[in-house]
Amino acid sequence: MHGLHLTGARFREADLTHTNLMRTTLTHADLAGATLTDANLRGAVLTNADLDRATLTGANLRWATLTEVNLYGATLADATLRGANLTGAVLSGALLEGVNLTRADLTEAHLD
Image (cartoon, rainbow, N blue to C red; front, top):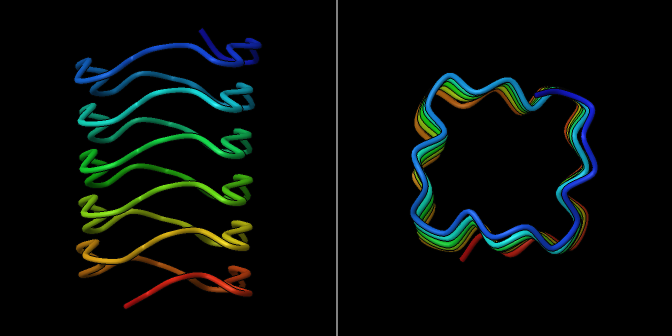
């Protein structure tokens, strides 16, 4: 299912565990409360997506575009965000234990 264009898609509270969404466009997608444990989102575009309280434990978000994304209260434990663009992202209340943010762009991200 990788490389799809799912702009505006609604996956609220969906179980997407182990799903391959590599290079998928999910701009403005509703993923609030979704479970994306161990999902492959490498190179995905999630600009302005809503991931409020989503579970992304162990997810691969390497080189993903997460500009202006809402990750409020999300669980990102052990996720890989290496090289991800998190410009303006809301990370308030997010669990970031063990997350890899090497070379990630956190310009204007909200961490409080």
